[in-house]
Image (tube, rainbow, N blue to C red; front, side, top):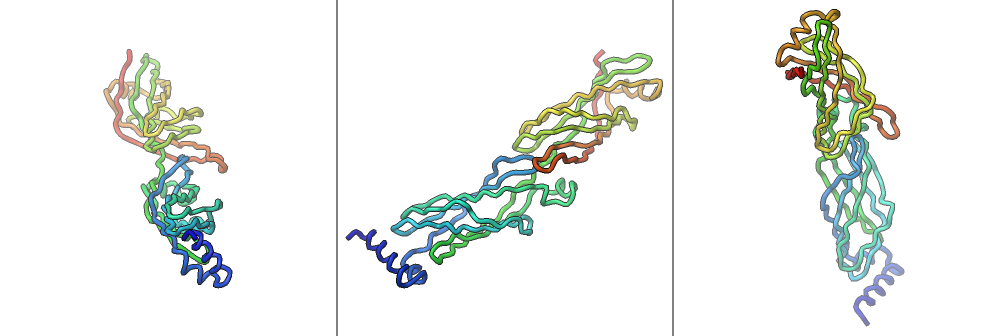
Length: 277
């Protein structure tokens, strides 16, 4: 009789007469090895972590291993306990890649926006076991996951379109830098612009184009100045080749299932002033 069939008969006999203890003497425990972690369907606030494990079955018969449970901790805090819904079958004398997908919501890890901005990474610790027929094969993986970053908003330049004795028309060009490996969708942008310590404009942009992954998008803000109201100093300011600036405001995002979320931003520095006349 083929040794494979003998193995099956012995296994059945062990289950019927000896229970799990006898079965464990016949069936060798599978080996579990962590292979890596990847990220998919990422956005600024949500995503899925996919943990890959290589499970090797050294036995001459296939083994079902439906009892896969896991516990994921983020920065030392328990985040989720779960069980893999789909059944796992380990073919005889082979290695299968088992994936554990875990959905995460980054906003739940932080108590404030400041906390998000201060962290570049989060530490994770995934533990669990794969079991069947009284066997529990533990596994563990530790590592770090990057924290998505809010766009960086700054002033690229100020274009002076026209100047008269009464006032001037400007275009303030804002840079919106996305350093993430996925696009970022802004619902709106509130801004207050100062040049040389004087407020030039304060308004809202309700429609803001998406920022591609690892890309910089620009937003042109038209500004109309009245020298009679703002004084000669503003006129002199526009005659210079550059000026100190300060930019403050809010970025508005739509988070699925949570509605609108507002994050403030600020930047300062020196900006070139270009006259297009």
